[in-house]
Image 1: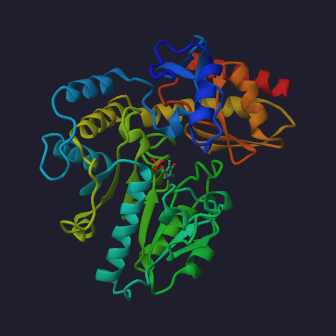
Image 2: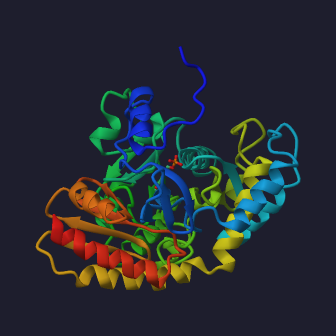
Length: 406
Ligand SMILES: *Cc1c(COP(=O)(O)O)cnc(C)c1O
């Protein structure tokens, strides 16, 4: 039996086979085996170049292998990487100061994956419901929206309305009340004295880049204020410049009570997430109530601090607004009976087709563009926010060619 695998054959097929042979089949990825990446570009093991229009689901808004973030990672890796929260480290405090100042909140609780930060927000909202609002114990309700995506834990999928996320994973966690996304009247009707919060994506990314009707977010927020209900915004995908504002909530001038961030907070180098809130809310957590071995570790903190610096210093939000307008205009100019709608904001763009989006995705991949279908008929276009004009031109050229070819 061979144990060492020195010098794997340099063929995409080989690595695809290993994945299929040894992995769980819980994803259906593009057959693109990436070996190297820089900025908006990917190279496969055969040396072919691709434009990345997925950005690891918006976790690499800053572009792949950003030198500033990489330097922070390497420097910190040589000092101390992990302490656990049993003691303190000299990186978490500066990171939290930068995160809260950037996001406009008083406090932040660091976690690792997005799902953990959503879980944190759910716990915080429920605790507020019992201790401040006076909801009877175990009766708190959180209103969620149809077609949502907040992660994959058993509690979070209990809030999902998508059968494929839920099938045979029950029994589910009670306390989530779904209403149609974008329907403020339905939201209003769903509120009871036991409602502690709503949990909402300002734009549904996984759900197919669904932008709610103009004014909906503002109304939802006003309804929350009126009924003493917390507004939790899940900006894990929409945050940190993706939609052309620092946060998608800024577009509607809405200030959440709890903001959930992740993905680009780690700059593509490390999983870093957080739930942010003001002191009055955050102090409902007492020592021992909640935590994470890896949350706020020095390596994560150093990487996240650098990731935030890049977002702010390189003005990634306004770049996304500029580049997004160009991409959107170009995509909309393509006349094709296969395209039903092109929608989105900034560089979070969805192309709804009349045919399965996998077809367009495959035609684009043949032409050096990596983009993935979400929800069968929608192709998501979400490149790193550092995309420049030459890459935009390439994208639009290949988009037209791919549309003509399918
Ligand atoms: C990706 C995502 C999550 C989950 O983040 P993970 O890091 O995969 O756990 C939650 N909410 C939204 C809106 C997301 O896009």
